[in-house]
Image 1 (spheres, rainbow, N blue to C red):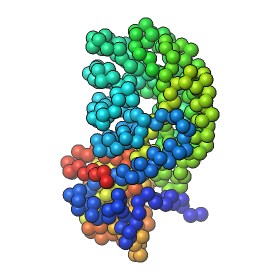
Image 2 (image 1 turned 90 degrees about the vertical axis):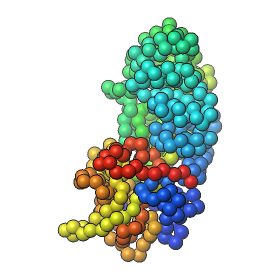
Image 3 (image 1 turned 45 degrees about the horizontal axis):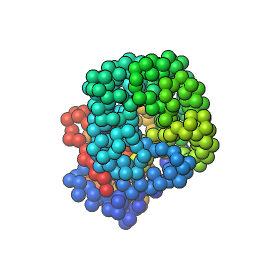
Image 4 (image 1 turned 180 degrees about the vertical axis):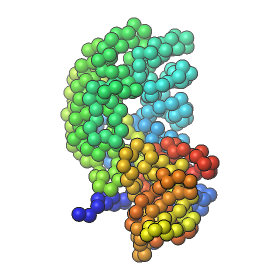
Length: 409
């Protein structure tokens, strides 16, 4: 039985056996950006992905971009022009969001450890706080009173259920995120006493899910739970954020997520929400799904060396710049991202090789025993699916190597 293979990566054209991004050869981009390693993001790919998503989802669904997936200001500016709102997870991301010129009420601020100065900044800006605890609610009320401003807030709910088959589970059981659903009724009563401008609920169960069936089940349970909790709300529910979780194929054997059944189910459920919650705005927030496939991480081969029957391709990039591709960002058993020799993608001469970085650790692996074109020093290695959780989730200061560059084309 053959090992599973990566799905074909077709988002970037290949001309003369060289990857093209934004109509330019990757070798040309390397010169333009000032050298390797670098991340390159394709705005056209992001635009296509949003158009495909809107075509599959019901009319009237609000789509937010979760900045944490890729907070590069140029990327956020582009996504702000495509999305209906932005979700942030820090005051730093909030500043990037507001710099786009977006209406602050379209910005939501989540995260379990918001500091007082972050709450103050969010309240003063007019962004919507996703309250993660009763204590955070009390602090927001005090700060709002001191500012003479009414905080805008939704309650983030930690449901009893989880998003099955998700890469990262954000809800269900004991969690640092949100308020346990059984505690929410009492919290809503207190929220009304504090005079906070209640906007609605935020329920995010998990991420990186490739099962339409699991996403539909979680969305249905989320909508049902929200309708139950609405009975305790001090004001009508105006916004129901049902999270995201839509995944992209990262590893061998990963399928593409089928959006059609998700969209069909949401259309039915949104009609129900309109009736039971008096037309509340239904929101999904997506990060990786919108930008993950639009990016490449590119590094340069500096050496090739045989070792006891295996070939090692040594590059000037590695886990310090792309932790996820190294397998050290949530993987239990390491699996390869799609990796190619970018300037000879198909390459007639091929070999099984390991791609490693320059760091003094055996964890510094970008590809393990992959079928690649024979790479020589000076060739470029490209890691697909690198538009999300690449640059900012990596230990860039590790061993004091210079950081990678970033470019949007």
